[in-house]
Length: 435
Image 1 (cartoon, rainbow, N blue to C red):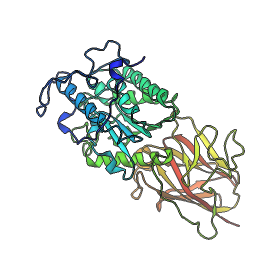
Image 2 (cartoon, rainbow, N blue to C red; image 1 turned 180 degrees about the vertical axis):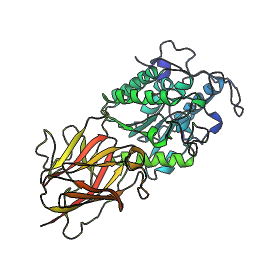
Image 3 (spheres, rainbow, N blue to C red; image 1 turned 90 degrees about the horizontal axis):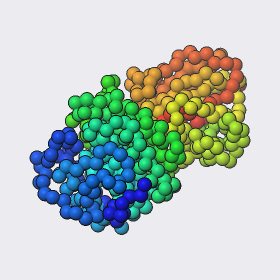
Image 4 (cartoon, rainbow, N blue to C red; image 1 turned 135 degrees about the horizontal axis):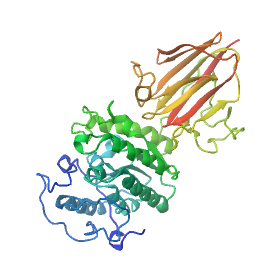
């Protein structure tokens, strides 16, 4: 459905300082203590008075404080439109608005903050022109928690997300979108874990048909053992503190690099003497994959589940859970050997390293397991795996800590990398065989 003409004017954005006092209220709330209930002017930046003719379903907030904020944000953005062309646009509610100067977390990368405290999925849907007018280089999207506060069902929220993603694709199918799963919160904030899990499950379903979308599991990044927000990162169990924004930025950076939205420092690593690279850093030569028997000089598998990017062999994000795939070396290794590589996992990412045939789990260990008590694992950073195969057994370490002591392996076989879910990057993959 097309947006009404009132909303098709040029709207755009200015970065604003965090506004903690404008956190989302309950449905019965009226005006935050720090806000002045002045009527919002009626013009192209105002919220429509009724839902008639608007796309989507579910709540659009019309509290006085929210109407004033909505108008002031969008009117101020219009003044910054030309300066913020070709930005990575962060789109969402108070969690995004309160991030303020997003660019300070990504030096040298042009960003624009399009968060409005208290907004819902339907609110975002009817203000997408704010984003499109910037010709965004990419979009980071986090929205949906306030819909739950307004008692919207997960199916309604996901239906609006489907319309948002379709609108972005129709505007420009080449615009990459990083869809962040709804952050955990709390029953006390009228955002129970079961509802948030369901929303995120439905978001994954929606993303399956949108190839420009990369899912980022920010729920797993911030959830405690009960599925609620970690209190040391979310003091009010709704909004992250500075540490939380740092972790979110850390999770986004590898995705940006893979999508070409952020620069990558060159890796000038040289293998040790007697080690042979299994990945040349440029393409998938030396590897084989299902129907792609010849990957010589190719940078991607046909389904794009594996890609050579920035000197890394990237297992990209699959929107489908448990759609397992494996990339194998064309060479088999019958002799004893030492295999070394480094990996970096996105939150809750699940991959694996096949040693001739058996799999060594390679995951975001502290979240995805099974080695949740590792002392030297570096979340959202590079970690080293060393596999020593001797006499039919494999001894495996991660950053020097033993994760498999004596794993039986066949007499010969290839090395494989599994794709399950989340982004996993591998680099410096090399092997030294013992004659």
